[in-house]
Length: 577
Image 1 (cartoon, rainbow, N blue to C red):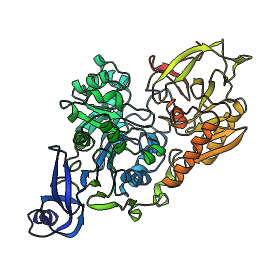
Image 2: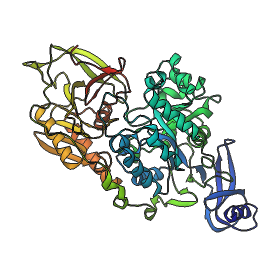
Image 3: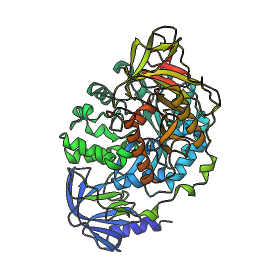
Image 4: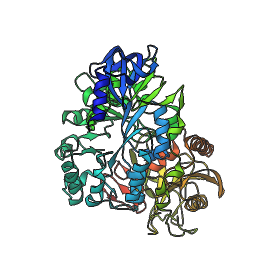
């Protein structure tokens, strides 16, 4: 009964050799923020001692720093366009051994089947991938998604050890107005001992107390120092986000001090594959923070122990007896090159290469076939007619590298009362086509900022309901792009003159690729380059930005399959100004 514990204690007491000993290590101690020159003894994947040990197997760190495995405190795996087993490969290359994930992207399209797929695929990897249950599926009643997850539906998932709690509660109004559905979820999670993430975008400081009152203790939506300080003052964990679109690190770093740092963690939230692969994940954020003047040991503490404590993970986040043996070697604590990587004492990166036999393939998961397919009504040449009652219109104005948009009111071009895109003014048509329930809904609007000169860009990745969103200079290319994505089961595409120029199929729920991370990256790179050739702005990622223009819980003007949406009014609005 106690044989495993007994073996660990015996190894700790040096009564028997440890299974593995890392010799000559400079251990980063995240409790004391000191460097310890010591051996690390490991048995059954658990650190059993720091000191002078002998092992059945010994690895010489040769004086390198040994750093606890990094933790991403909030990430949507689907946004990388990879399934969990491929996401794990790239993350581990960058020393990220744990991630707290919110699969609400696939849950909005595939419900519990999507959740089960993500959890089971994550379990098959050597990485520690924990799940927070989606809190808002659907997010709002102003868009059409593929499923509804109420408290009773989510309850069985709380029995899984890899499920930690309730993911970002995005509908602040529902909490403030004590709507039954969200209160049932919060209460159920509290009774199960789980934690609850927040999503307080655009919430004024005097209104923010509603969240911690409801035991919602984190937030990743602070975009300036004032908002960040407000969260810290209320006892919340501040999640400092640096993703592909939302880049808040530089704005929030001034609030990180000796007094506040222990309540701060790093997150990526939404990170596209090209950034994940070429720049990195939490390791990239650490480098930026250190370059900006943050003490390296403090930054590492935020990226490890802080995140673990935030989510009540008592055995990860540090290199110490009783903690899981997750760590990596590096020879520089400022530039953080990631060398050998270990998870549960098992080496997953060796000589700069993944140990690939530790990972499954996409086709091994039987739940793949159960995921729903594209289910839209047939389209026609007039499906994207946008009628105007006047010459002035409300326009979605992109703020580069921000989830927030502006509402612009300006005169636009029309022909017999129908909007005509203007590449000169950069006023382009945007449309959202419902693809879950054959409602026939098509939301139409106008967007400024893409700078396309020809063709159309479309994607079936569109937060949060993941209908197909398309932007284009003419209706013919818009129609061709959408029909092509429906035919291939989802993806991302660039077209011109009703011809496919580049495409990345996303066969897993219209959100993730089955092609492996290297091939997916190559296709994504070609797709982005093609978009640039069509004139797409180089100031931001065109496809990721397009996917966020449907995110109705972020200010200010967005679009869903039901039409134009005003965040300040929290209601659908007319396009006519």
